Image (cartoon, rainbow, N blue to C red; front, side):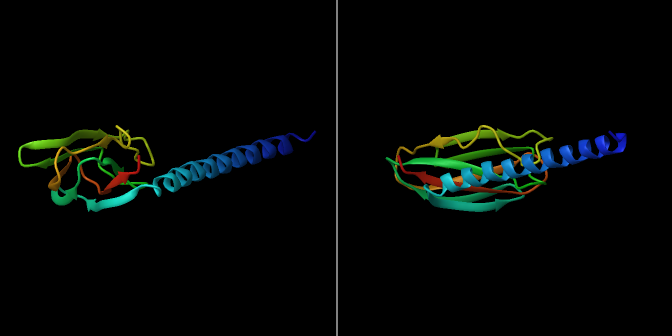
Length: 141
């Protein structure tokens, strides 16, 4: 067997493995997105600096908080507080791995509820430069 064809085959195998990994990654994220479509969108915003938004929330509903850091450029950490006056219904510090290409934030999709109906302040403070999107969904449970 010609040694150059063996080397060429090895390169072809590596390219095929890379393509399979890319396709599987797209399928996993696509399926996750599809599953999230079952939840009702309540609020969303793009974040690049410290920001405060208002959102109307209701008791008896379970909410899910999501962060999309995109493929590149999301902040490494993000502090989020959702409150109404002195009552804090949600407070979390999100972190991501700086080597993670897809910027997955942990804790991943935390849930929360509120004790009273009304307008809540969503305070978001990125701990580093970059932009991301945040959203709140009503989880049909």
